Length: 115
Length: 114
Picture (cartoon, rainbow over the protein chains, first blue to last red):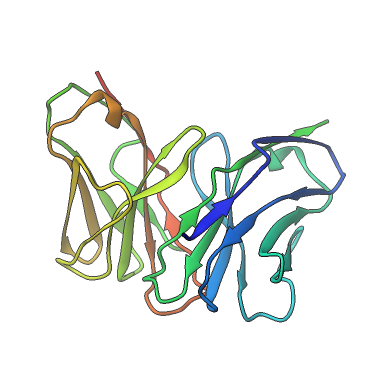
């Protein structure tokens, strides 16, 4: 079965430090996409970063980078130089190949940035 | 920027009522989705639509129906609301056919069924 696993329900990080949020996925499709979203306490889902299964390089978007290890089926999000505004829920999601862009979400990780 | 608008941020209804949640997007996206979000469970797909008048069941369609009469609007209907449908409901839209395009979400509706 296709599945996303986020094993860290909650994490703390000191302001200005880097943090890694874990995500593993399970699929037998050779083609798939991996997404990370941020959800602040206000509730909106904000798209952060995308990685395609055939992409050779790890995706980066500003302070966000994705550590993609295909053989291990992991797609960890790295946030560099954490800011107080990074405190939020973070969701990893997968779009299986051949889907209509449907997403399978993990249960999320709550990140708290300490001043 | 893509704008996905959900009609209400907060909604309180009574058990047995028929409830309509409305979602409108302004980017001519073909695909639209309804999720519910519960603590510790993440987002679960209720229904999605990839064209006008087309709909597909997601993972948890029981107790819900949807309507898509126009491309920009996707409505979620609770036929007879029950307390276990108290939740956060999120609508999303996406352009069809391009794999790296994300879903764009509305701000969500926090629905309480009393």
